[in-house]
Length: 249
Image (cartoon, rainbow, N blue to C red; front, side, top):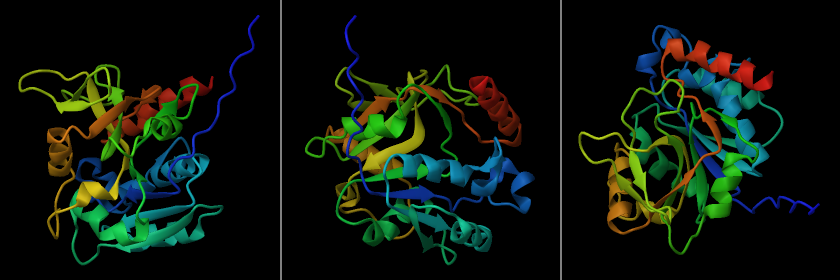
């Protein structure tokens, strides 16, 4: 019998950002008094699930942006133990959307590639941690962004038509109109600060930057292992908890 090759954990980014500033309109009425990142799934807030994943991946510093019910989020991260170190990026004056929020935080993220996660990025791991898949696939010379992708049709709680088509080399293009794309962006990625060169000031989405990277042939993807759970509505919380319980059985 052959000896299995041991898994070598890749040296991934040491810094990360979690997008936690959204208002969570689709989660109402749950988010009337609780910001979406603090909604509990399987006994822990979504934000802590994301921070746990990053800590397991070897991340040392995480920037968390805040806007809606910001004081509750700030109090929560101050109480969190153990690492990673958490730095708050305050957007109470203006909600900057995904792209603007990251651009504002770039001075805190340094000059190297970093992980980016939505606060509701939630999945059941496969045999190998998915952030390690991302780290192992990252190629700074070829890529400006590397997205973790979930299969559109098998994702839990996701009713949409998907986002991307991926070629054999992992390069991404957008879903053609009136079609269902094979993959949906799961809300986890590795980004280079280069992606933001020439980006506008103020509030803007990451999507125009992704489109620009597609045109340059520098947007790539990795198919995730395990099951992605899209926790976007109150009904999806219960469905996610059932799936977590089943996976632990």
